[in-house]
Figure 1 (cartoon, one colour):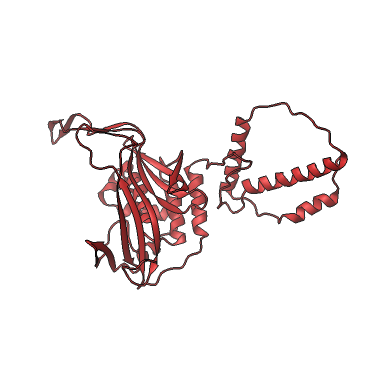
Figure 2 (tube, rainbow, N blue to C red; figure 1 turned 90 degrees about the vertical axis):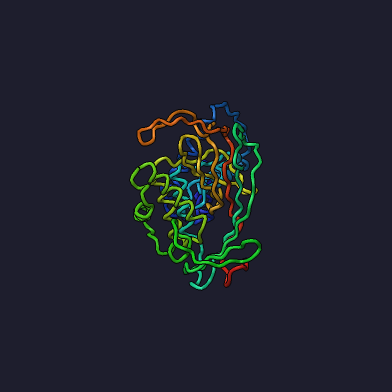
Length: 347
């Protein structure tokens, strides 16, 4: 016979508001987490402990509340915030890149946003690190020191001008277009439907659209660059993530990534079988943090051998060097982004 009354159950119901139905992404995350937990936990004998009636009633109600809380954390009705755990130490990873990018899209679409005026300037500060040009025969490893620079740029929101510091002097010039677009006005006019955004990318990437693999590589890179170089409105940012999810070969990097003390999650696409291009997002908020190119396998470049050009065999005798798995080729971290009334001034 149960030791709690109908009144106890009613009190528990009133303690938590009725949640909205969970999103498909949230259901998938909850299912994956529970399956992983079930697979990792071996059956074990549970020792039964006899408690006094009052103690049993308190424990029963407490356990019921804990179960309700755990389910509420896993099945997030908004689908925006990925739960960190059901119980201490139990991580709830994204099932795949499509799930992760879906969460990022929902989070982006729900953020507060104030559009800049056409005469205002978007300021972006980025720290860029990378391995230096290798010497012939050199072996680059994860311990190879990285060269560092900090880029600071102001772009007028209407796309008319860009301002950069050169030799300590602020230099203003016309933006000159480019792909992907680097001004707010153009980005804000892009399609918010992911299929339409991909179609726009393919139509504006030039001759590379002739080859399917090159189209996919270029589209993935351009979408990431658009986030890196712009203040992107919520609807377009959500479309970027959903468009990325449609590109074949995009995966989740299962390894933990730390960006200046901020835990990050990465979606990645491996190119040429050895270099992984990663988009880094905050693990909790899915805010864009930066990009990374890292060797996912050992690689020797250029590959020795013979190639054919215009009917002639040409031996590749160029000096080569080796890049070991785990070597960071480039790491770009966003340090600041904001809107100012004039160039040369930080937000």
